[in-house]
Image (cartoon, rainbow, N blue to C red; front, side):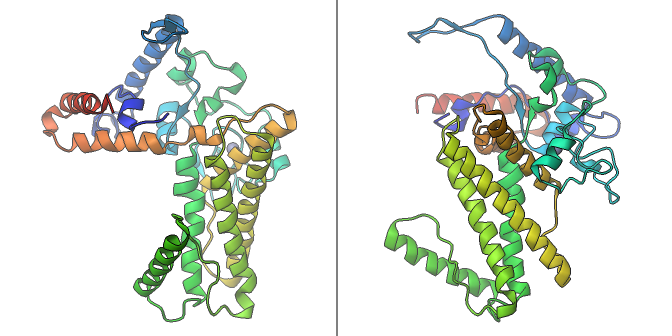
Length: 355
Ligand SMILES: [Zn+2]
């Protein structure tokens, strides 16, 4: 949705973490709040909401398609007992993913091949002991209950796998002494000047210089894999941002191709770093959740059904909205924080209403 996030999102409630977290509360107040939200959303589905000023209808029904947020948020709201915090050193645990059996015996979660992922999705039990109220209350596909809790690309890629690729590339360049004795400050200055010159010349906003100075012959493959990982990650995001809600076949295929390439480059870099004794390119559970996104695109291709742009589950603008509410909550007294934050939100909404 276009526009300022405060006008395209809706604040339902404000609840401080200390009011619901901790050993004694065990998220119960949060679950009661979510129960309330689920009942409200169900009412909006059953009873039409009257609207004015629209030529083609006088009422709408609200259909809730899913819940999105960072993994911690999904775990709390979905009461997910199979989650990323359940990883074990033996690889024989309860599982790290609410969508499949990854992390259980014989199902390593870093195996991202399509056939292996398909096997992980056979006879998957529910990821919760008690069905969360959003799933229990809202109409949803009975065979895809766990999928109600969506993988958010903002946290999985930009603050996850792709962020890791960028950070690992920087530290690996220092491992290999690619920048010589150049300090971080000098390097940033060099990149900044390079970037400024490039942007001035071509009116572009981003530039990555592939030509790294002074690479020894021994490291050329390693560095070339790093460039490959960065390029495929960048191409993946480029396609996401330039596609509509429903992907064209060519866009879906490009996403699968670039996504798998970045995953494969990551794997090769992790293997190389391990053999060199460098503690780099560590697999994180978000790597598996990226594979889940790629799997859904591959599955759509196999079943010959339309694929939705996974960017629709990203939360950049929602994070912006939450940031504004969070800022407002820091400007009020802690004793009246809940009421005053909602009041500040309403004032903010009014201020942006006509913009
Ligand atoms: Zn999974």
